[in-house]
Image (tube, rainbow, N blue to C red; front, side, top):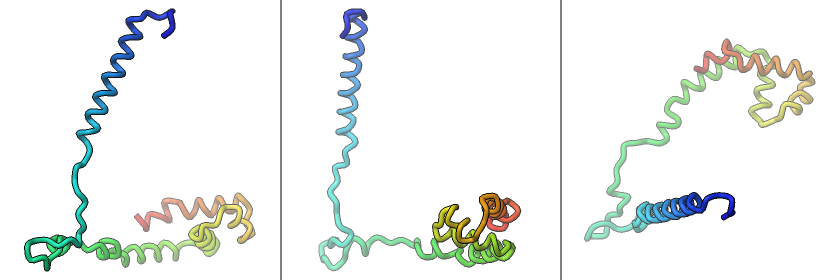
Length: 132
């Protein structure tokens, strides 16, 4: 507290901060999850020959979800790569191997302008519209 400001304002701010801290603390206790962790392999039922995991059924197939449309994506990528000139394909291959811009320019003996042009053509809408 500095003596220049009125004490009432100081007291109001301190009390409101304390009240807000108390409310936050009380709400924190409400948010705590009071659940015991149970293994999915724990026995379930009276006969103990069945586990909780056996009782959970789901028709969701993760592999199908991930790899289901892979043939369509592969076809689009092949079509995209066929239309690119060889120089741009080389840039794209090096980019996919995590090479930096300077490394690609050194490996392919390109000027910065040639590299930027190749990147621009690789990213141009005319070329990538096949992938969309």
